[in-house]
Image (cartoon, rainbow, N blue to C red; front, top):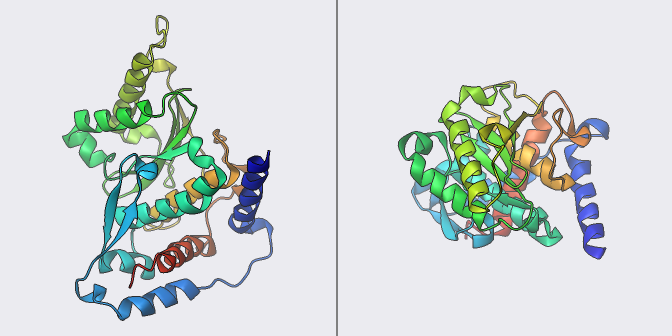
Length: 282
């Protein structure tokens, strides 16, 4: 009961900051971005130096050191399209701040975007299938929602998969549906069928059609840059509420036509504050 109370309290804190459309707004701040940029300029990173951030096994199912360079920092400072490194660092932030302290790592998981993306699906589908299936089978005994930050080659969207219930939530800030990326859908369906078979689930009257894809009416971006930030907020919103089901019309607590600049900037500030805490620029 104590853990549930802690999760509820943590959810309330994040919910309050995320659903700014219903509360008095504070002036947007760039405090942590400014501080991080100052620290960065005192290092060798702007002239080619690199740093690493450790990604422990609980995040993606394997541990490694994530390299980060000046280009990654500039994507956040200059409001450019964000790449895999920025996404991975924010995922570690979510893991450290929302998931692990509140016991949510037993209900949610992440698949690494570097191992599941459209380019790899087209070039090495068997490798991607094997990788995703291994992660799912490692977690086959409990219902869990897996986030896949999916890059199509020039756009970020979010897949949230509940493999035991065979449900795939599709959140795309451009408003496309999964038919835009047929190879993606085929691979995910193939993985879920293999997952079902390896769990020895009877399928005499079931097939690929039993897999349910749900297009979620999520907030929509209004430019060509913000897809990555929207995708990160989709994960943040879901974890803040701690729910395994994503409503078709999105969560009432965070429902809006689009995320404001302040809400996008909030993701940047969290990213920068986390980097400062990790002392990456030392």
